[in-house]
Image (cartoon, rainbow, N blue to C red):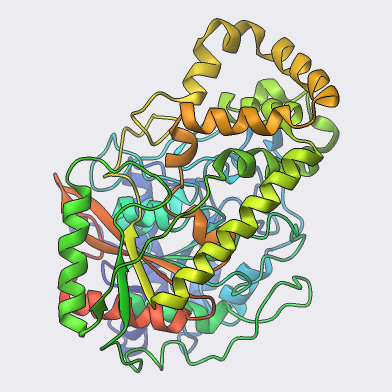
Length: 506
């Protein structure tokens, strides 16, 4: 019996070339992906839409940029007729009545073939790959290790050789973090680069949509398809187009580069700093860029940012909260209760002051340098079942396991909420103390969050491995310099080509 056909292990652009040359057909590729998903133990998909995908494959227009390419859609984005659970038991059984405009562009302009929804962290709230509704999603490089989040299943599907194209979203690192853990390219564009409509919340103004990529040209072509103005999302930017065509046209020699393996006070795991330093020096030498010193003092806004961002979840849950608390993961429930207790006008004011300080620090930095290179994650992928990315004492663990956390949290937070009406600055002071005591509040997204706050483009580039697991090198540029970052990533790709799928795939 002939072996089952394997999905394409090159990038999406080369798959389109194979379709156009007749080497492979969209239906053959779809069936190969379906077979691989059925055999997979990664748990990358939460829903499959196979009958419709087969019809789209038959009708595929391979002349389009991604014509006929099987695509995975992150489950936080709605697709009409598909489950729209937002990775939460709260919305189990809910069916989307409309499709994300981002996905509509990928299909109508790009010609991609949506095959199903990929797993994500609950409401995109954590940088881990485990939820109550979907279970654990595993890293293709090593089962039992995390994919990160929140674009968990998308990263697993692309790195694991199930599909060559998958959507993602990045509100605090949710494209770059899983890309770093899975050896993929993860581009977070300038805020507003790709539409978030319909129903785009206007706070916290950090989320950027995009994709998990095997290659730089895949990410650039994705911009050609999906970037641009949408009247339903007033934050969207004009797209100059020609993203793929202009690859390699930016002179890199002489660019000023600061290499800061850790930023924002994040503690890196052993070996990561030296590894990143070496890879950064290789990239600088290969391009003729110039390393310069930079002092980057960023305020610690993780705790205030966490509680303030719960506002959109409150709007999403509506009158289901707090009755639905038992359906939420403990981490999200604790975050909701904490935010209700600690968020007030004083907390909001402090958060705004911190954001302004962060913006000014980043602006001052980009007055001195063109690029900043740092780590994407504190270390290689941690345990898949873990709820936080830090091995340090965890706030979540304390809240769940301590006597106060398990038996007295609600009463204590109710009392704190009452006290804050008398002493309105108390919550903000407590949040600052929490961030100092529990480094996980900083570690989870601490390296990536600043580019969401400031809105600048940042890309995670595969940078080899540590103990057999991928490490991401993150490069930051000033606002609207997305095309420059594509060329920096292209230079890295040419200097050190990375495996497009995890070892052993295909």
